[in-house]
Every structure is written in structure tokens, then in C-alpha cells.
Image 1 (cartoon, rainbow, N blue to C red):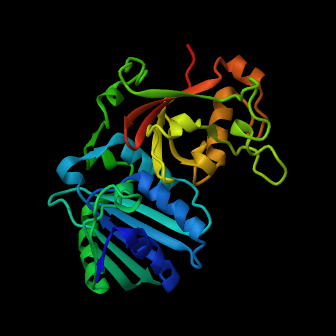
Image 2 (cartoon, one colour):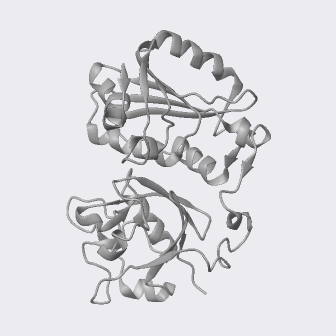
Length: 321
């Protein structure tokens, strides 16, 4: 059965959840942590009846290696605490030739293969979110697909393995990421935007922005960065609830998403508190603390700068001179 773009995410990634499937095995030529993060968030929003286990093999690593940011993104997701509805996430890389250029999505119920798809769609957002390009997927024999997946598995290594860098080659996403210190301090030619962390009053929002969670019944660390309408409409950040990576000036990595009405907020979508915890840590505040203008002034900054490395990767600068 042929599946085209308009039904791709629904048919391949979500409908099987309603058919009793509780485990997904993915063999994908190319994959990104942003796609994995997007999928995790949407599984939560779909309120699947069963707890889902996800196994991902990235197939083309022996052919053209892997970027540092992609590897670190996968490693952080796998090593973090999973949200409700997700019981396990494993990510592995093919380590030796031949590289795997095919794409398989195999659904199982308690270990038994029940549904599978093969085709052109890599496990990346541009395949499943929006109308960036045409993809074609077909239903295939689930038992045969699972058998092929299992034949590839012995040639892989987990992304969290302590010796993973001895088996694969990691390359910087951009030349600027090669710099060991002050990653983008010299990259003045990159397109950038600066976003304020205070409102028109000059103060952080009392129940918005960095203080979004400062209300009854909310986790107090919840936060977002306000995105002006002009910037949201400019195409600088990906929209349509796509996830993107921010590499920070202090060598952390955040998965972010533009959301809320009129695309007015940048958040950490899987856990809204991650962004608030990050900024409170930079400001020297306790988790859950109310953020004031005095806190920002003491730190030395009331805004944050984003520089665009590619369509899914940004550099976030909150440093002070």
C-alpha cells in the first residue's frame, strides 16, 4: 500500500499506537535528535494507551560519519529521564561497512511484529513535518523487516557506549564548532537575532517569559523566551512545531520549539522546565526562584542572542563580557 506525504506521519508513526503496538524499531539512513524529540513530544500529546519503547539505528554513519551536535543530542535524550508514556529509548549507530541506506519502521506488540513500512523517508523532520519534499513509503512484511533489522543490529554500537568514538568518526556540524573555546565569538558573518528577556516595562514578566511557571499549580521553573511576531514571520526559526537544537556558549545543548498562539514563544517542548532551570543556573538562582530585573542586571545581561548555523541548529549566546 502506497503512503504519500499527506498521511505519512499519521500512518507510519501514530496510527499503529491505536492498533495495540507498543514497540517501534527504526532503521534509518539519516536521523536527528530533533526528530526524536519531536516524536517523543507528539507521542505524549497523542496520549497513547500503552507505554512505548523506541529503538533507532542510524545507518549511514560508516559512509559520511556523524556530527558532534547530532551525537550529543541523541546521547542526551537517551540518557535523560523519559516522560510518561515512553518506557525506553535506544539509539545505535552502524559502525562498519556496508552502510545502511534504507529506511524501515517496524511496529511490534509485545515483541511480535505486526506492521512495517519501507521507503524514502528518513527519520528527520523534513520527511514528516511540513511539505518540504515528497516522500513515498510502502507497507511491507513485518516479520521480514524485523528479521532484516536484527541482521543489522550486531554491527551497531549504542550512542551512550563509553567507547563510541573509537568506532565512529565524529565531525563538527560547522567549521565554527571546531573552535575549542569561544565557539562563535568570531563568527560575525552569521545571521542572528537578539531576543529580550524582559517586557516593555523593563522587568521580566510576572507570569510569563522566565517566570511562566510562577503561578499556582504550575512547576515554577517553566519558562519560555518571547518571540516577537516580526521575527517569527521572518523564517529565522523553524515553525510548524518543529524541534531544533541550540548549542549554548557554555557548551550545553537544548532542544527547542516555537509554539503558543501566533508563534510567540520558544520553549523546551518535552519538559518546559528545562529552559527555566538552564537560565536560573546561569543567573546563580535556585531552582524555582522568581527571576527579577535585579537578577539579570547582576548577571550582566537582559537578552539572549541566537545565531543560525543551519535550518535545525543554532548557537545561543548568553555570555557576558
